[in-house]
View 1 (tube, rainbow, N blue to C red):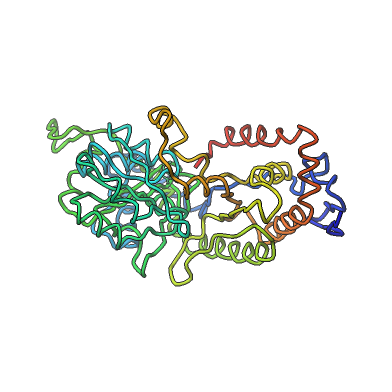
View 2: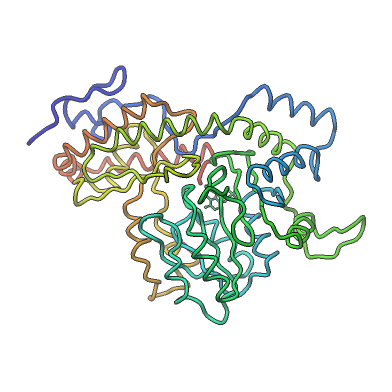
Length: 433
Ligand SMILES: *Cc1c(COP(=O)(O)O)cnc(C)c1O
């Protein structure tokens, strides 16, 4: 066996042989778990001061001054004419879908967080899953036309992992067929496309400010649009359809953002450039660490755009790395690197969609491959470049000893344990997306 001689990772952990990997009983590389999507939190004192303000004012929700200011800042950052803050991103998607009059069928990718499709389905709209582009992992505009039927009313595209969709091609298809174009921009706050901030594209864009996202309001979201009439409608719809005291003109819902959420959001926005600096440094550390590793590729961010670098995505090609993505995941989990399979197994393989397809599921070869190869690694303020160098050394060690590791994994079963541990930890933290 041609074994990588010695690996020294961390202050105390040193691995001289594969048996010293935590999955085989060795000491984990990290004593504390490293999470994907660990919250980025801004200046605590400012958050607390704003919370005190809210209590002093006794104005807790319903278009309070912090929500109004938060919406104003989002408009400034995105350049969109309107911003409607919402209680979360999923409800933002539902409001936007409803406000745009989407019904029947809407074309959307399956390689995304399940809320993209659920938001449609919850509104009685059928998502029709379209395959993605292998380079950008966003919906492939060339495959949309063949999915259009007389029932199609729109496209819901996702700027996955902060990389913008091909907005020009999508706009062309939408306009040619008279379809509405909505973007799930949950991952892409603070990012640009062709130099324009995300938030200005299509008929409307929806952000999520969930705790795990780049900028967070604990729970929260926002819809941005340049359409005045749509903005007015959305503003009424998210407040039960009230147009005046005791007067309701629309079917509405409660989709309001609260003042404490906006206080958190405003404070997050003030730290945005610091979050980006940190994430970018981490991304560059990952680039250096992953570059020499055979069969593992870091999905790059476009150099000529502004990115939030919030998602570190690897593609694992087992035929070259010698270790499968899922085995890699188990090994990482045992070492307390709680990497995630974003996005697995693809929404078309989740309920209720899977059962609806019955024996004829849609053929989404690029989506399937991405769901099989993708792995998302920890970053954010809680992850340091030293830890990333250690993760890189670990990955290098794993691929250099892939044959032996795979053989040992096949020989015993205690490699099931780390997945259980992740589930345990994730449910404690309430972090999912
Ligand atoms: C997080 C996320 C959502 C849902 O946003 P919430 O604020 O959690 O409701 C929707 N789509 C994508 C792609 C997401 O990552």
